[in-house]
Every structure is written in structure tokens, then in C-alpha cells.
Image (cartoon, rainbow, N blue to C red; front, side, top):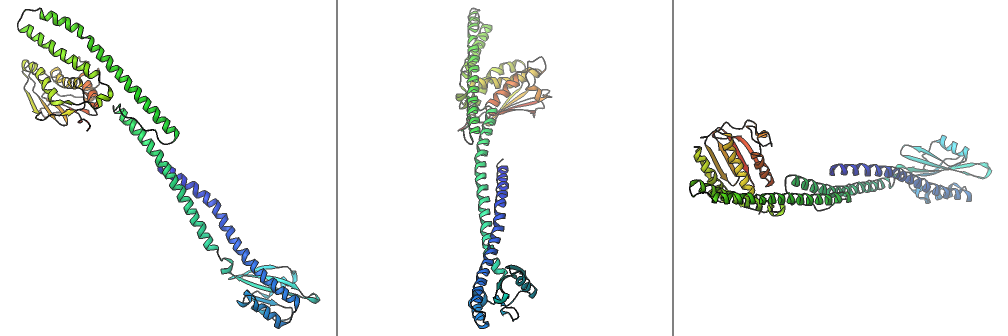
Length: 424
């Protein structure tokens, strides 16, 4: 856009400059020509006055020599029947024609032009005063004037192009900032705002963008609050079930149910806390991936032991902070681990790797034939709703990361949850 505006300004100003400067150049040349002819006319008029006083040859020679053109050898007086006085340049035929017409005339020759001024003497005779004007006098001052006009044209075109470029840069800068804000908002960054700048239309678009972002943020916060309220309402039936479980006789079954209720209560608390975080708070929220993974592996290891699944954990020696609330991180980890238990036969080994880049789960199962379908809600197959990896992908994208599904080194599926570290 900026280059287009610059080219447009260059084309317009160039045409305007040519439209004005070409006639000015022609007028300048004509003015120089008229000035040279006018000077020749004045010198010829001086000789006409001398002829009116006396036609003596000696006196006319002195009069011719006293003029600038005569001293330069460019003036001559043609008396009828006598030789020319001075330095004649014009052809005899042109002198005769001027004498017959008794009107001033201009005759062009190689190297200049001759101004012929007839003068009527006593007895009806006609003398012709000739003043030769060379080309350098005709064009005197033309080239400097043309250079000045050309310089003025360059300044005007360059200045207007520079101004158009600056205006285009301001317009393009505002447009790019608005586009960058839209991309960040589309990527899930609800905290992005655009400073209104540029023309009134772009400033209005930036303000409308900020209003839209505020409304989207408020809408998402309202939805999260609703999710938190729904999760909170599950506490009532959970409490009733806990009371029934506590009424059971003491034993292994009662202990397992009590432990399950405690875990479920913790999960609901984490979901409620995470859901009620505002979008702005969530953007700066940090959770230790290693700590949460250790808790979830403790939960899933019981089932893995029952099903005879060899489990390997790689990494986790140092904390790995990620930009996610604890509740959402639990959902994402459970989605990846639950996918292994749901879609591979019992006894299938799996490996869990944690690093600053995120979480990776490899299994030795049949793999995922269509990774795109695996993260598409409702089409995962095997009687599943397809919400597992879809949830993990959505959570990763909300944190600025992504979900990768490839073939792992164990021969089955490799699902990687890539999460960037918190800002700052």
C-alpha cells in the first residue's frame, strides 16, 4: 500500500509538473528571443535617428561604431546605390525586400538572425539598417532558466513523493498494528488492544476492535463463571454420595470410595478455581507442569498397575512453569493419559516425557491413523465422543501452544502438548 501511494504521488506530481513546466520552458525561450530582438530594434532605432539628421557616410560610420552591435561587427547600414556601412550579414535579396516593403522584418540565418529596419530618406529613397543577433544572444539565460525549472520540478516531485511516503507509512503502520492485533486476538490473546492511530476511519476501526475484544473477554469470562457455577452445583450430589459412602462398613471398598471422593472433590475445586479466573488473570497465571503431572501419574498409576501397563517417566527433575491454570492443566494431562487407556489394549506400555517444551506421551499401541480426525469433536471413533484430545488441543491453543500427533518411538501414537513458558 505504501509503495502504491508513493507511485501514485510520483505519477500525479510528475504530470502536474510537466503540465506547468513545459509551457514555462517554451515561454522562457520566447522571452529570451523577444528580448534579443528588442535590443536589436533599439540599436536600429538609434541609427534611424542618425539618418534623419544627416546621411553623410563619415557621420554614419561614427554612429554605427558608437552602438554595441556596431562595435561587435553586427550592425550595417544599407544606403541606396552605395556600399553598406558597417558589417553586413544579410543577403542582398532580403535587403531589397525590406526596402520595398518598408516594414521591419526578421530573417533567420545560420548562427543567428538579422533584424532589418527600413528608413525612408528624402527623395523617397529607402535605407535599411541591419542588426545581426547571434544564437548565443537569442538563447542567453535560457539554459539557466531551464535548469532552475528542472530543479524546481525535482524538488516539487521529490517533496510531494516524500510527503506521500510519510503519510503512507503512517497509514500502513496503523493498518499493520490493527492486523497484528486481529491475529493475536484470533490466536486466543484476549488482552490485546490496539492504539487508535492513522486516518479517522482506521482510528474508528481500532476503537471498534477494542470494543469487540472487551465484549469477547466479558463473554468468555461469563461463560467461565457459568462453568464454575455448574461445577459447584455438582458438590451437592457429591456430598450426598460421600455421606452414603461413609455409612458403609469399614474396609477396602469404603477406603477406595473415600479416596475417590477426595480426588473428585479436589478436581472440582481446581475446575471451579480455574474457571473463575478472568481472562486477564489467566494470561499471567503460572502452574508447575512437573508437580501437576506427578499428582496425575499417582492417580493413573493405580489403573496402569491393574491393567499391567509398563510405565516410563522421562524428565521432571526441574520445575516446568506453564501459562495455564491448574484445573485446565489437569484436564489436558488426563486427556493425554486417558487416550492411552481408552484406545490401546491392556498391557500396552507407554512413556511420559516432560521438558521445558511441554508434555509428550508415547504408547506402543496401534497408533492414530488420522490425527486431524482425532482432535475433531465427535469423530474419534471407537464409540467415543472425541472430546479427549480435542480438549487438550483447545487448552494448548488457549495458552499459545499447540498439540502434535505423530508416530512415537514405541511404535504407536506420540501426542505432544507443546506449552510456552509464562511471559516474563
